[in-house]
Image (cartoon, rainbow over all chains, first blue to last red; front, side):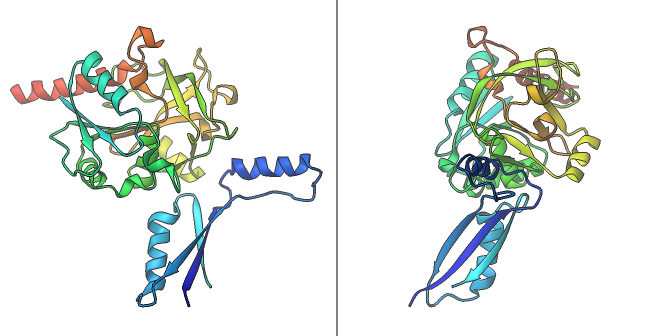
Length: 80
Length: 237
């Protein structure tokens, strides 16, 4: 049984998201005009060793140090 | 005076920077390998353009953990002069040596062309050979050069005169039409509060010979030369 955590990285509110804006424009062109906005983000699946210790702290640490840029992005960690 | 040009996996302007310094500016220069932590007694470090580590994750995000960056962060924090050009600017913001972030160009396209820059602060070691308000013609080549920062932090940059260059047109007009990537307030280059670390998206090393279309990039190198010769004079006295 493998143990996984999923990390979601999202742009902070107010940070311009040119990709999200463009995706929403494309949706409108396709005839889907029900969406006020689209925000583009990332997720990471971390597969964790069975004998790992203190893993919540370590996951938070790698999110802050590498997976997200705290200047413009927030992250949330979901346990699978 | 000696320059050190860092080569990361994926750097592609390291030779341009090296050639500009050695063959045009005429100063000593050495390549610095990303796996080394030796700055080879460089006086000025250049983080060149390119796509370090494939720009995986985010531009510049992986490069900040290379051994050479550990030495460069120490060097910068003790007053050493560092210039990050294009991808090098992204490495500097990711490393926390400069504030803010560089995100995808607002039009989503890679932009490779000559643009114009206005020198907003000429009282820096990087721009002292310019006059305030000078318009420089220098090329850009990037897909993620859209400078972003929050309003409060922009105010701080402005109050500390940390905004060194803004995008403008050839007459020095700063507006949306002269902004090639959506950067907030047309910001093209900033420095840290202490004034020893500069990041800029345009490529001064590509504008050092008439044949290349402009020699305006030389101003940056001349400014540093002036600064270092001043220091040498002081030492002699």
